[in-house]
Each structure stands twice: as structure tokens, then as C-alpha cells.
Image 1 (tube, one colour):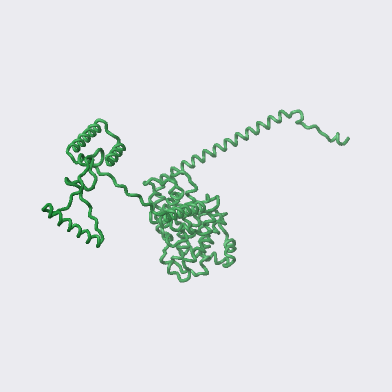
Image 2 (cartoon, rainbow, N blue to C red; image 1 turned 180 degrees about the horizontal axis):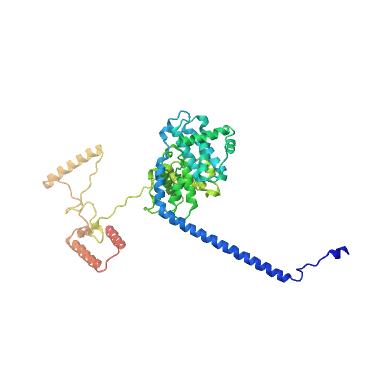
Length: 436
């Protein structure tokens, strides 16, 4: 009884259809509102892109000139780094490997790494750095670059840097070194990095992430070598971009484009440092996030090495030198006699045969006796002539045969003028005449 007394019928039991209609109308209204918001947001994006493109086109030259000016002003001095008493160039790869791993762990922007290396080199150009403080200067430079470029939530804390250094430095040392670096550089941090020039170079081209990742990979390899420390970022960016396009078989830009004005010597110098990259850098760019360009680079270098080895091992092929006919031999030519001994009116010359000594003495004795007896019989002495030529050879030496050959030659020339032969047939005719 209590259950039935407390039970109240549902007021919407008999109005389910009406309630369903209101729900559908409310959902349609919300969908229209969301669609209108999405369309308004897309229009804002389009307007922002148009304004950004308009502003970039108007100010692109001014921005580029300012970047080039700052690039010249913020270059480190390599000769000053050379005279450092404790730190040496062979220590640089170890510090850069550490900074690249820290940069990757904190997921910082690419420009942050290049700016940190620039701050490190500029500080080492102006201050004496002890070996025990070299890593501390690198961490302070990375901290300053992250604060300058990245978002606030991506900036590493001092505790995180201390942990990565295995608590080698105290917390106050990071703060003091950061302040000392800024004071030494005069608070001039705005160095245009190579990736900024790289973005400017590909601004008008279609987006090709593989080319950009390959260029960044080449530029990070260049950080490890002394020859590129004092190079302008603009020169390095253009040379690395041209080299990456060459490796990936991409077309080069027009000669009027800014990126096409690269230095060929810088490009060659970069290409000579690609064979032994750092293991940390190669592992970083072997991920799918960077299009696995380190694997592409390795495959390209192996292919080039195999081609060079094959070219060295293959012996040169000697091409036979074929005698070419002179101009007078093209076409029908006058038959030539063979280069043999010609006939004489009274016989052929007998080639001399030199006998042995004894046979020679015996032959001379017989010839003397024969000449003496013949001279006594005929009144004079001499050699007997060779046998007379045959009738065929006599006919070939006669004037009638020569006239017959000239008549045949004139008939062939007349037929050739009436029906000209192709070059191949001419060669065959020439060969045939030579055989005759």
C-alpha cells in the first residue's frame, strides 16, 4: 500500500513524442550554432593568413636585411677560442652531444639549440673558461635560449638541469653563470639562427618536410666542426639547403631566388663532413618525426662509395682505332694496281737468294766456267733472262686493257649520277672496288 501511495505517474509518459521533438530541435539549434562558430573561426584564420602574407611581403626585405646585419654582429671569434688555456676543440663534441640530448629531452624548438651554441661560442670568445665549468656554461646558454625562444612550460628548470649534470653544480651556480653570460654578451641575444634563414629560403616553395629535415641534419653536423663556427648563418643555411636538395634529387630554385646564391666552397666543405656524423645526431634524425633523413643520408653515401669503387676497379677499355677513308675515297674510285713488283718487257726480276758459304763458292766457280765457255762460243757473256710473262699478264699491260677499264669506269660514273647511292651503299661499293 505504501508503495502505491508514494507512486506518482510520470508527467511525460503520454507526451514522449512531444518531448522527442523538443530534443531534436534543441540539438539542431546547437549544431547550427557550432557550425556558425566554426565558419567564423575559419574566416578569422583566412583573414589572419592574408594579413600575415601581406605584411610579410611588404616587410620581407626589411626583415632579411636586419637578420643579415645581426648575423654579422653576433659571430663568435674562432681565434679567441683557439687561445683558451684549458678547453680544447676535441672537448666540443662531448658537450654538444650532451646539449643535443637535453634539447631533445625537453622538446625544445630547433632554433633554441642553434642559439644556445651561438651563445656558448660567443662567451668562450670573450672569457676564459675552465674545463670544470665548460658544461655549466653550456647549460646556462641552453637555459637562456629556451627562455628567449620557447614557451614558458617548455623551459627547463634549474633542478632538471642539475639532475642532468648529475648534481655536479649547485643551484646557485646555474643562476650566477646565466647572469655572467648575459653580462658578457651585453644582453645581445637576438642572433638569427640558421633555421630562421632556412625558413626564409623556403618561404615561396611548396612545403617539403624531408628537404627541411635534411638541411637541419646537415646544419647540426656542422656544429661539431671548427671550420663552420665563424661562418655566417645565412651562408650555412643556403649551402645546406642546396646540398639537401642535391641528395634528395629535388630541383634547385631559379638563379634569381635568394636561396640559389649559395657559396660553392661552403657546400663542398659541408659535403666532406657527412661521412662520420655524431651518433647522437644520427639517432635523433633516424626517427619518423624527422623523416628518417639520417638513414637516407647513409644510403646515399653508401651508393656514392660503391659507384666510386666500381669506377676505380673497372679497367679502361681500349677502343680499336679504325682507319677512316679520306674524302677522295668516298664513292666510286679509279681501280688501283696492287703494290707488287711490276713486269718488265724481258721478264721478271728474280729475288736474290743468299746461299751458304760453300755453296756460294761452288756456284761462283760453276758460273765462271759457264761464262767462259759461253763467251768463247758466242763472243759475249751475260745472265739468261727470266721466262717471258704469260699471255694474260701481257694483255693486262697492254693499252687495250687500259682503254677497257676506262670505259667501264665512265659507265659506272654515269650510272651513279643517274641513280645516287645511299652512304652505306657507297661504302659497300668502295669495299667492292678495293677487292677488285
